[in-house]
Length: 89
Image 1 (cartoon, rainbow, N blue to C red):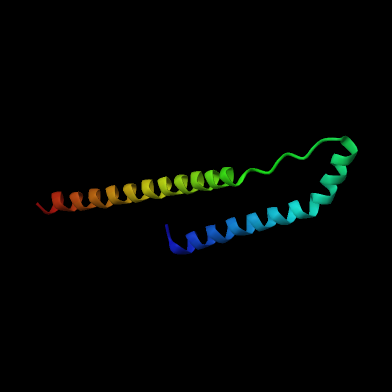
Image 2: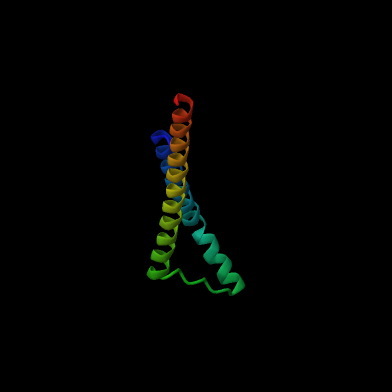
């Protein structure tokens, strides 16, 4: 993938995470008030281990996707090369 697209995807993902954090932060007092009124308890935050597992799963999926792209690209190049060989012979 073009480096510019990779950079754009990275910054879009980062902007999304930052926006999500901001929304959660803004709505935190509303959520607390809601929980007080309804009597519902807050869900526990995921443990450090669970967060690391989720990060590793995301990295694995990204690596698998990149590997599949690289394989498809290599197959295409090999196919193009073999096509040239046959037409030259």
